[in-house]
Amino acid sequence: MVRSLLSIMSSRTPNDPRSPKELRDEERRAKLTAHRDMATWGERLVPLGAFRAATSRAGRELSTDERRTQAGRYLELPPDPTPVEGPYHRVAVFGGVYNNHYALSALLADARERGAEAIYCLGDLGGFGPNPEKVWQLLLDGAVKVIQGNYEQSLATGHGDCNCGYTDPRDNHFAELSYGYTAQRCSSEFTAWMGALPERRRVRVGERELLLVHGSPRRINEFLFQSTSSVGFLEVMLDRERCDGLLCTHTGLHWHRKLPSGRDVVNVGVIGRPANDGRTNVWYTMLETSGDDLQVDQLPLGYDRLALADEMRAEALPDEFVETVLTGWWTTCLEILPARERAASRF
Image (cartoon, rainbow, N blue to C red; front, side, top):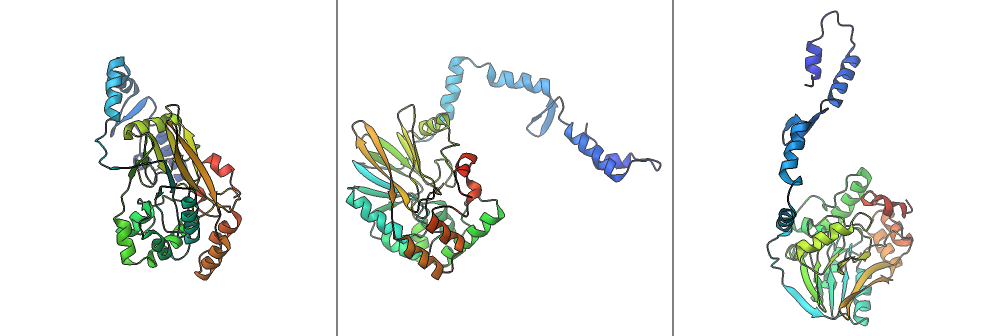
């Protein structure tokens, strides 16, 4: 049983030679050894032997058939009521506009020239860049099918921040500047439009049914990075969602993985800022049928970055944002990067 600092101090006699520091050290040692030969079970500490016996009975001795049954129950989800759109032969998909109306204009022209039958945006229309209403004007004709990202969700509900998940004070500072700027310049009509966007779509490309989300099927602001999304995890996620492929964004970095099952997971990239690779272009994804397979092309997109930089300066946006546009290297939002992606960064 651990003795608290209070009990340790109360046991001290008037002639006790221990100093307050020694008492604190004793309490610290007691805390460090409190769980020796014990295990945490709910809100209780129990003997480790009893815990091991209980866990053995509660699953480790299941038969093969019982294990399959338990796994099946885990994978069972209610049927997804999201309607399936298409079928299409070729679709363009992108995310993270971040108020970059120059890149959005360039993408619409490029995707149409490449023969895209449908164009999908996976959310995060605002943040980082200037004049969000210009983005909305390009989307109003309905040619782009948009889903809700964490930015749209936050703006439409009057949330105090972008719900990006930053913890670093510096990143939070720039995120607050970016979100505050966008929130102040979005009309009530625009925010209502964002609030009505769906959180997911399903699209059939050839014979493949693809699930489109912003972060992940589990959470709108979950980061699916290439280095931290294992094959096993992705296979289970697609099993649970009963889909032939998953398209997401949110991380700002594009990637594609063909799974052993033959299914595809694609982070489609963002068009609002470069991919932290020293290149000033942005990225989007074109998907098309290729026999029974799905062809995935991740395409670099050039746009008038100098005009964007001038407009950002005119709107008094941070110099750090402008530097990213002009150099291709992120200067903010670096804390979200896992070790492998951070190692490829300049900063």
